[in-house]
Image 1: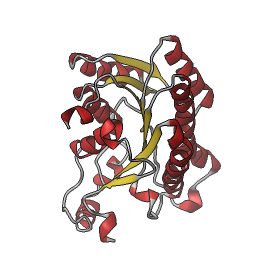
Image 2: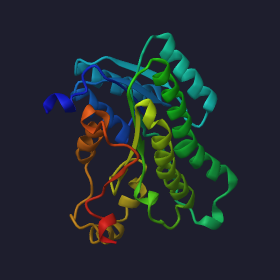
Image 3: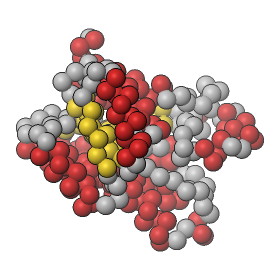
Length: 255
């Protein structure tokens, strides 16, 4: 059973891996034997995470990537191919959010959020799947959804639209690529304190109100994400595809 969950001889791409959830998942996979391809916009952050993973004795490769730009995504996979790297895990983690009333959402903000959270995830998945098929490899794609993949959140219409799209994309691609031995699943973190969500946690009243709605009465810690991601990345989930798993302390089930 232990070998089933092992990630040895696997190579994972994690987008948005310079900080927050992406950094945490990169380290978690590396600790479980996985080699890592980091992809993010900040070279400084990439260098820091790369150094941490190297100390764990795993191979680590870093690439600058803005997932909003499809040309950059295409070039990213070309570089991977040139270096004869053959990843079999993709975690579409890169994402952004900006709290704004719907009446104040302009085209620039809409495009920025949808292009990062949804378009970037799709084109990363597409190029990743193309390489898997070319190399006749089995693969696992893990998308980052959200509570807003299933519920509406005020002042987050663009973000909610993008994460609802992630759920639809996960289901569509899982059905299309199952016969190619490519599994596509998603995780949906509940309330976790990250750079993206810090604006909410600065409000003590918000914290108190939100905790009252979470059955487990606590916010998530990064470690709460690790087990599920290792499951979905490993051979232990070889018959699981098209699913979204909420990691939210019971929030979704209680509303």
